[in-house]
Length: 425
Image (tube, rainbow, N blue to C red):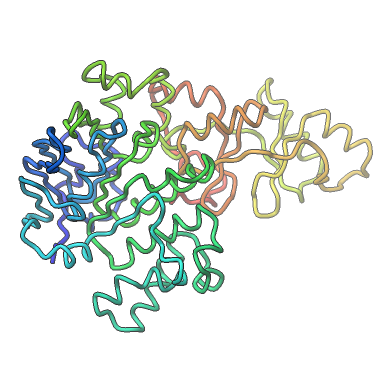
C-alpha cells in the first residue's frame, strides 16, 4: 500500500546528518513521511494537544521527537499510524495521503515498537513475531523463515527463543522481540515510542547500539520518541525538539543543535557538557586509533621484550593477544622480566602474567562509549576490537581529544587495524 522511496544522493533530508549519507550504506528501504499542518484537539480540552505541526522525514532517515512530558510527542507519533485520529491536517507516506486509508490496513504497513513491548503474554516469541505477516496472508513457510530471520537479526538464537513465552525473557530480550515483531512484515516505516525507557541503563545502551546497527543494514524510515536528549543525539540523524503542543523549537542534526541551540529552551535540553555529548556523534571506526606493541600467547618471552625495546621510549606496556588475536591482558616490562627469570628460555608468554583486559570496545561503538570504558578500566587506554573480536587498535585520551578538536589526518579503525581481522559492521 505504502511504497518505499529512496532519497536522492543518499541525503538525510534538509540538514541531513553525515551518518545518513555514508557511502557504504545500502539504498533506503524506507518511505518519506510528511506531516502537514497536523492538529489534534480533544473535546474536553480547551487547548489542542498537537497544533499545526509540519514536519518532513526523508526516506531511510531516523528522526527523533524529543521534548518534555506532556508536550504531545507521543500523540504526534500515534497520528502517523492513526492510533489517534488527527482533527485536521494531512499525513503522507511515500507521497500517499494516508488519512483516507483504512487505519487497520495502514497499521499493517507500519512497524510499531513501544516501551512496554506490547508482546502478547499467551503467545510464544515466534507467534508474536509472526502475527502481522500471518494477518497479511503470507504463506506458512515464508512466515516461519521470516521469524527465524528476525530473531537472528536482533541477536536472539531461534532455537533457544522461538518457543519461549514473554515472561521467560529479560527486559532487554523482550524489547528485542518487540523490534523484531515491528520489522517482521518488512514495513518501510518504523515508529518507536520510548522503546528502551523501561530497561536498565546498560541494557538500554546495548539496545541503542543494536538499533543503530540494524538501521545501517535496513535503512527504514524511523520516527523515534524519547525524553532523553543523550539518546536522541546518539540514535538520530535529525532531532525535532518540541515545545508544548508539539511546536517545533528546532529541527536539525545533532551536531547543529549541540553547536548552536536555537534558544534557551533548546539549550536547556542540550544541558551542560555539550563537548562531551559530541562524542556520541562519532564512532570508533571513524577516528585514528593509537597502537601499542602486541604479542600472542604463542610468542616467546624474548620476542615480547624485544617488541618493547623496539618501541618508543614511553612504551612500558604490551598487549597480550590470545590465539584468536583477541585482547587478553596488559603486560608491563616488569611482568615480562619477572616471567623470564622464572621460565626457561624460549617458553611462550604465560597467560597468567600481567593484568587482564577488563574493558574493550567495538569499532561501531561511539567515542562516548570509549570514554566510559577508558575511565572504567583505569589503564589510560582501552583496546578496540573488530566485529570478530580481533584486536584493531587502542583508544586513549589523546584519541578522544583529537577527535573532539577535529584533528587532521584522522583515519578509521579499518585503516589503523594492524591485523586486518576485525571488519567493522
